[in-house]
Image 1: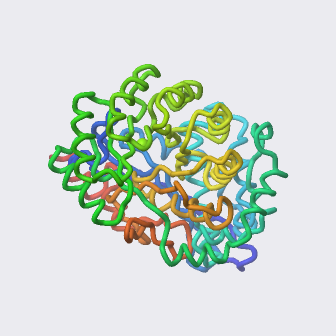
Image 2: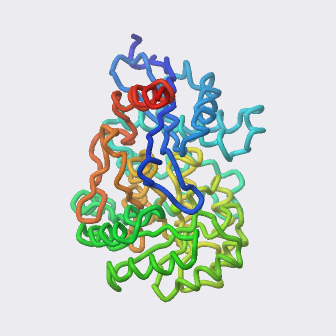
Image 3: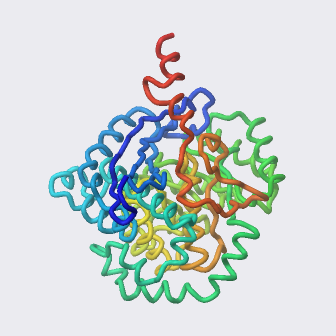
Length: 441
Ligand SMILES: [Mg+2]
C-alpha cells in the first residue's frame, strides 16, 4: 500500500464473459439471429488502500469476445503504473495516449475492436474517478466545471462543426436550472422505452402480451425489430399497434438489413402503422444513404448510432442532415471522453439523443450520460428516451431501476459497471462453471 497521493494503478485484469442468451432468442434481430450477449470486461486495481476498483467493459454478441479481450490486454502498458489521482483528474491524458499509440493506431484509427478496447479502459477509469469522488458518474459530470469538461474532449477533426469555444458556450448555457433539474431527475427519473416486446424471434402472442405489459408498466414507446420478411413485419406491426393503441410510439429497427432503396420501400410499406422512427435502415457507415432515406420516409424519423465508430462519423451524420435521432452507445466509442464530444455535437445541431442500450450493462452505463445531458447540457428530456431491455441486469451490483417507464437516477458512486463476482465465475468463457459443463456435454 502506498500513501493516497502516491497511489498507482497496479493491476488490469480482463475477463471474457458470455451469457447464453441465444437459448431464448432474447436479442434476436434481422442481422443477429442468435446472439450470446457478452462482455469483454476489465478491472483496474490500485494500491491506494481504499478498496476502490475501476470496472469497465465493452459489449459483443459472442464469438470474437476473446479478440476484444486481447485488444484490451494490448493497452495494459499504458495503464499500469499511472498515478491514480492524476489519472482520475484528467482521463483525457490517458485517452490521448491510447488513441494516439503510433502502432496500434493502424488497427483503426478510432474504430472497431481497438477503439472499443480504448472505450472499455477509459470507462473503467471514469468508474474509478466517480467512486473516488463518492458520486454517481452523472453527478460528477453535471457538477464539473464547463472548462474541465471541454478539456476532456478531443476536438481534432471536429472544429469545422464544433470548436472548444462553442462547446464551452453550450455548457455554460446548460448551467442555469441545473439544481432544479437534478431534483426533478431524482424525483421522476429519465424517460425510457422498451425493446423487450419486439425481438424477431417472438411469436405474435408473446409480442401482444409483452407490448400490453409495457404500456401497463408506464412506457410510452416500444420498439420492434423488422427487416427479415415484409409480410411478417406488416403482421407484427399491425399486432403491436392493436395491442398498444394509437397513443404509444412504436419505433422500428432494421439493424442495417437494407440497401437504401429497399429501406425506403420497406419503411413506407409500414407507414400506415405510424412508426415513430426507423433505426439503422442501412449500413452505419453510409452517411449519405441515411440522408437519402430520411428525405424519402419523412415524417418517419431516421435514427442510428449504435454502430457508429466515432465522433467524426456522428459529425458527418449531423452535417448531412441524415438523422433525426442520435443513438450514442456508451461502450462502442472511446469512452466517456468521446461521448462528451458526441453529446456536444448533438446539442450544437439540436438533434435529440436517445441512446442505444440493452446488451450487457449498456443500460447501466448510458443512463449516466443522458442524465448528465439533461442536467447540464441540453436541459430537456423532450423527445429523449433511453432504450431499456429487461435482461441480464441481475448480474450487476448496481442494476438500473425502472419505475413507471423511467430510469431511476442512480445514487451509488461510480458508473454502475460492476458485475457480481459469482456471475463472472459462472459465465467466464470457456472455463466458468456454466460453460465448462455446457461444453463438456
Ligand atoms: Mg438497434
